[in-house]
Length: 203
Image (cartoon, helix red, strand yellow):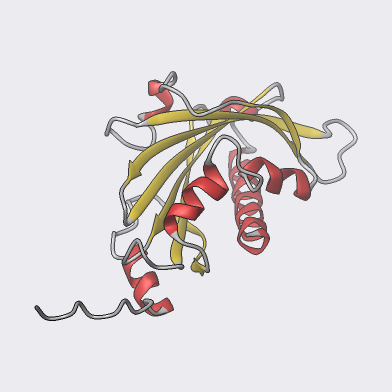
């Protein structure tokens, strides 16, 4: 019986080609260039996104100077109305982080509070996909829009100790304010890209 060929680690180019093989959805843009991490997909799922992970996204936010007001555990989907903003598919489970994102020096507002609803959408041996809906609250205009994101992790082989990561986003108006709408959108997108670039370097 012929021997199976020895496993060979995929190249960075192969991993990036895989994660980028799915077209970016209409209306979405890259938050940061896709990148490769030296960790298996399985370890990434449990080391970065499990309930007890020491490297969860809230830890990154704290390092950035943001405030965590509360963090929940993965459980049943309780906000299907928000999930509809990212996909019509049925989500696997949901997790909520309540945060206060620091703003530049401002005499009126020190932070903008937001609900961050993570929805687990895909979990296979080669792909792990989450969607994120960020909803502001407790500040003027904060609840006028949503920031909607796709987080895609992929590897060519579950035996690999590498995986590729792509993050895309879409700004969604719920009630665009007259006169300052364009300024708000530009500011939110700048902060979105700053946060994801920080996260990439943090990882």
